[in-house]
Image (cartoon, rainbow, N blue to C red; front, side):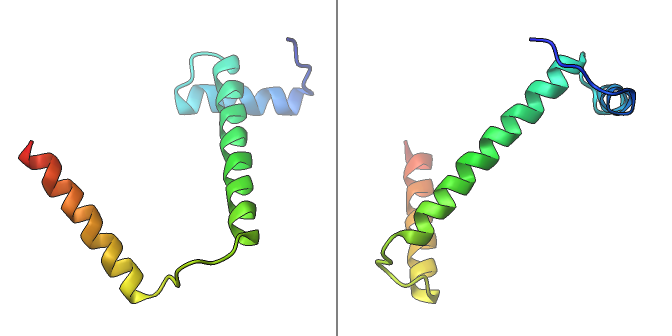
Length: 80
């Protein structure tokens, strides 16, 4: 695949490659595409959540129980 860029954008890409430690402009573009994929996936999950039926209120008790559950799993992993 070839992508044509105006000189201003090419300069920007070249600058990003050198400043951010990418080996090539292709690496930089691949990273941008991956980030866009992640953003779209997150957006889809957020939209799915927005239209879903609430089940349990996310109040102080919910987060306390969640923390306790996570701590319990962490302790279980340490014991193994």
